[in-house]
Image (cartoon, rainbow, N blue to C red; front, top):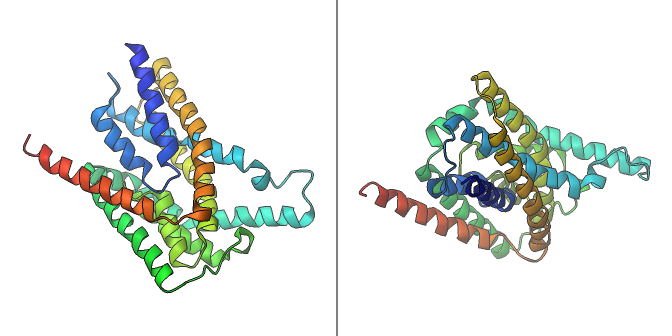
Length: 281
C-alpha cells in the first residue's frame, strides 16, 4: 500500500516540475490532481503545506542550471560580470517588493479562491490574455524594447513584480502573470521568461518557510512517512524541472505563448464543465 503512496508522490512531483515553469498554473494542476488522486490518511494541514513546499524542488533546478550566472563570487568573473550579477539580484529584489507588501493576505486568498471554479476562471482569463497580446504584438509589428536581461530597467522589473501579485489567485500562474506583465511592457519573451525563473527563488523559499512555520505553529509535526513522501515529490519535481526549464527556454526563442493560451482555455473550460456536472451528481 505504501508503494502506491510513493507513486502518488512521483506523480505530484511530475505535475509540479512541469507546471511550475510552463505558464499554465502549478496550483491549478495540483488542485485538479488532488481531485482524483489523494494520499491516504493525510490531513488538510499537511496537504496545504505539501502543495507549497514541493516547489522547493522546482526552484532548486533554477539554482543549479543558472548557478554560474547567479553566483557573484565565481572566481573567473571580472568586475563587470560581478557588478551585473549583483544588479540582477537587486532587480529580483525590486520585483519581489510588491508581493512582500501583500503576502500577508495569502491565507485569505487560499480560503476564498482555492477551489476549482476560481482556478478554471483564472486559467481561461490568462489564456485569453496570452492569445490577445501575441496577436496584438504581431498585428502592430511591435518589437520588444528589452531584448537583453542585463538591460532590463529597474522600473520594468518592478512593473513585472506587480503582476506577480496577481498570482495569489490560484490558477493564475506566477510565471503566467509575470510573462503577461513583461509582454505588456515591451520585454522580449526570452528575457521575461528567464527573469521569471529568477523571481521564483525568493518567492518560493519565502512561501515555503512561511508554510512550514504555520504548520509547526499549528501544532503539526511531520512524521517519517510524510517527510519521505514530501522529499520524493521534491526530488521528482527537481528532476522534471531541469527538463522543463530548458524546454521553455528553447521554445520561446522560436515560438510565442499562443499554444499555452489555448491550453489554458481548454483546461479551464473542462474544469468549469466538470464543476457544473458535479453539482448534480
